Length: 204
Image (cartoon, rainbow, N blue to C red; front, side):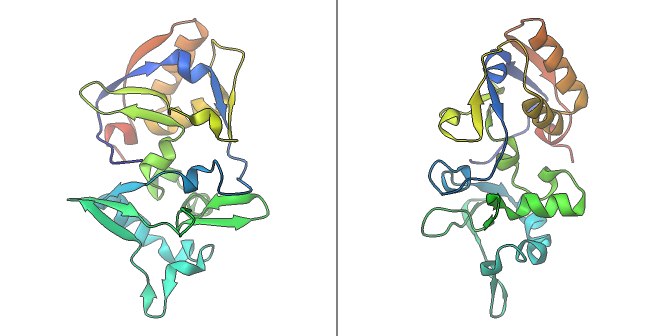
């Protein structure tokens, strides 16, 4: 999951989005777990937001804290973009285990703070299992191989989009765009172009 540019409108593959549902249920192991599969890169702004919640995240991931404060868990991969460290088994340093399985400490912190997850969680992680092709041909679809993960299921009822996917779209594109996409899918339209608000347009 790499860096993300922000277009002002986007082509949406409605057929692909309507063919799958997504619900995070907590993985039991690192096999086919998104938290142990991808290299996640964040912008400097995203990194600062994460650093701001490190004390709360460390309540779930004690390994974040060293003897002299918090460890540096970011590695600059190109100017202005930083990869988040992983453990030897590939699991993200912000992932933790609980009775529900593997969970994201940043997502949990956002819920505790009562803020949208994208305010503290990497944008690429908030977007997944959706994937966006970068400009100039910006397009929103389903990540290749998404169905090999337990949290994603194929839907037989192609023609509308599952509530979980619509909620993710509204969080990322704005409520108006999410409603437009849902209406278009119910009409059987296979593709649509929508104007963006929210984080996909680079807005807070």
